[in-house]
Image 1 (cartoon, helix red, strand yellow):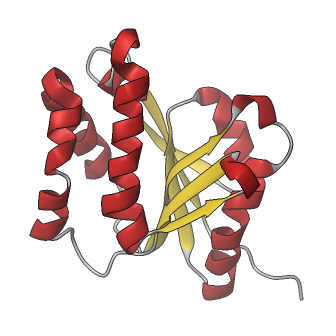
Image 2 (cartoon, rainbow, N blue to C red; image 1 turned 180 degrees about the vertical axis):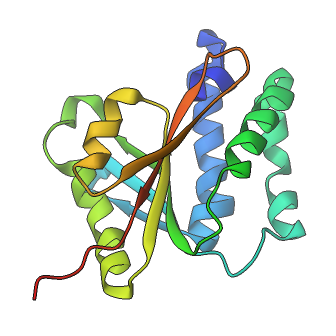
Length: 173
């Protein structure tokens, strides 16, 4: 999905750095939850259940994103609208991003940074939701209780997302 939003390989790394800094500063550090491992080898970015629809201040805070996206702003906004139109209305925690340094993958770090919020979900009886842009990650999320509830693709088929929902797990009796 990020390659779709930032297709130019020469500038992608710099654009992604700006993109994630803005997301952290304007979204996750203000209203969300961010969990990392030591030395930030893995990070999970969560949004708690919404009290209501996004507010105007939320939209204004994201305006600098248009500058980062540049010529891709229109395509990126259409993708966001497509995904948001399928976003569940039922209260849930939303996993907006999960990443692990490739050389540290397969060591349980992704599971570790997801665990605090999944524990909250189970304790509070709330669901969790995510969109995976990599089919290879679907099994990883299934192993943590998520199930595919749908798929979305951009019209040209270059981006495909798996929509995944996790009901809270009942603690053992």
